[in-house]
Length: 300
Image 1 (cartoon, one colour):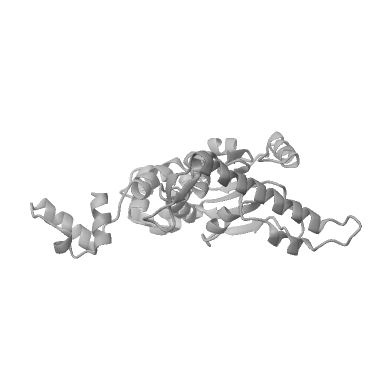
Image 2: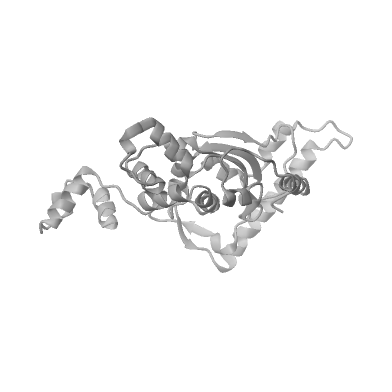
């Protein structure tokens, strides 16, 4: 189960005693507060706390730029201007703290985003639960032949069944040995900090992850992209739904300029100008490598 009975009881208690505040709040985000959004088979994401809203971004920008933003008539227009021109510090005025339960191998990808504060569940002090990520059959795929870090065709039939059996059996066998090693049944038992090294990378861990909106949007741009690994992408998509409710103006601008937009190199922009003049441009005359040309054509 995604939430333990103790965690659910804590959430129920927190939601049952709302506290008055003078700080800015977002009604839609208050609905998300503490609630766990399920992800994968045993994982979840929940908002523990947040600071700021769309108006906080604008407030910071107007303090920073003063009269330079007087021509922008509304908050959404200002936020779109900031996003369009890659201004980052106003977006750093908003922060969010998330409680995430995720497989260890996903956590190792996630931790590459080093612009957050992280506190992870410690297997040195506590015993990890017998919970492992086992993919749905349609999420099993072969290695891509064209991309060393991508997936190819989906496995099916006996091959898929064999892989799922290995994943389940190996995970359970490793956990059985983990339990045996830390058991003090008549023996001293191995230290937890040593016994944990026997556990596979699909076991679940948990952490608190706090970051500002600027860096969170960078995380979402990479991890909610269709090319990202499925298992981290579904977490990014769940977080994205929360951010959409938290800062709707900023999220719409993010979708428009970052997720739905494209950036051209100087060579790419030159090619577009030449094409608009009616000139035929090829890879050989573009000044781009084959890879750059292929990406440029896909944008067009």
